[in-house]
Length: 90
Image (cartoon, rainbow, N blue to C red; front, side, top):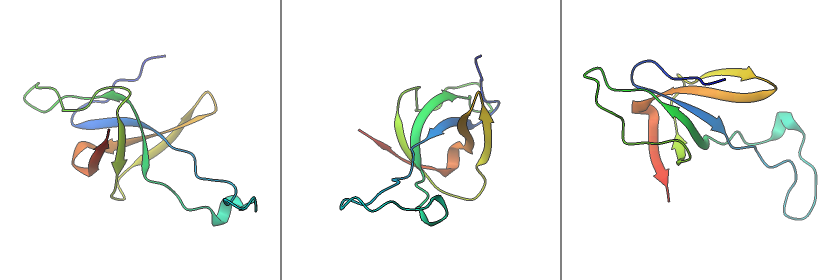
């Protein structure tokens, strides 16, 4: 299944939070720090039709509270407005 964002949105597969500390202590899911980083899956276009400066496979940090979370085939994804993508990690 291919999902293509409409407008200036980015589809991101969030990175998993660590489930144990460096010393081996397990952290319950409710106490795990929610990372706001992940891998770009697909990218929409600007309103004028030009492409956004991201591509599938880019590792990004995103912020804001406007990410729409959803699940497909037991995998978690988020739609994030492009303006909330803070940085690309290279």
